[in-house]
Image 1: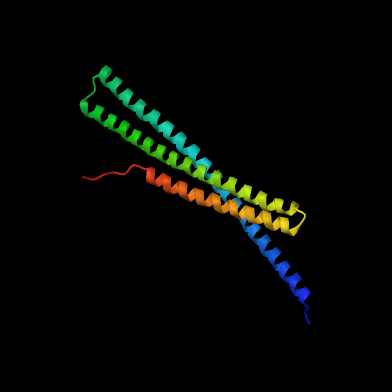
Image 2: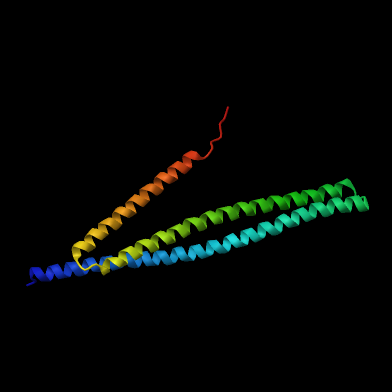
Length: 171
């Protein structure tokens, strides 16, 4: 026969196992976010370098075309073709700058997520420093309350940001 006390110990053991699983999953997710953050950093650097090179190349192509046309009196067809090539290069550079901007946005988002997860895990880890179960429970309630308030304020901020975006009016 299993006594009532044994059932309670087993239940406490299962709760601790679930807590460890949840924290373990959070740690795995945190590692995934770190990897994605590193990938986003690399993507941002490559996008910026590509955009910079393309901007310079397009500008140089257009300037060289105009100078060579004046010096060697090249035909209008050759000049136009080269200038169009420079403009296309500048458009590609602009696209790379848009990718760079989006990469920075991703970096900011994942950096914020890393910071929030680290803060939450640190708070949960500090629960073990309290001497009584009542103090731990009170602090856990406060941590949960704080997380909910931050999530709600973030949702409100996101709504406000979306509402502030200018809308195109059609006549």
